[in-house]
Image (cartoon, rainbow, N blue to C red):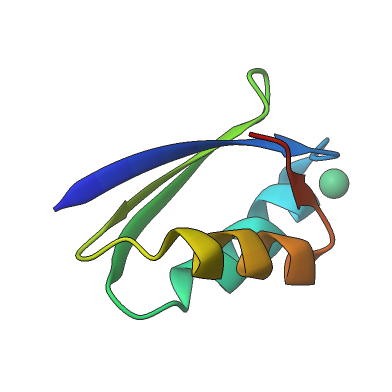
Length: 67
Ligand SMILES: [Cu+2]
């Protein structure tokens, strides 16, 4: 299991959390998605973790990975 932390721009409320969690959580191999609104981060636990797929999923949710 691999964990990756992404800095995501634009998340402000529970709606944002649900949108990001929903899109990223549907990716193959993803076991957990944890959003920290204060830090503006999304921590993904997956086996394997597909970095580019995570970035695309965040983008599709309407936000942007900045790291
Ligand atoms: Cu929001």
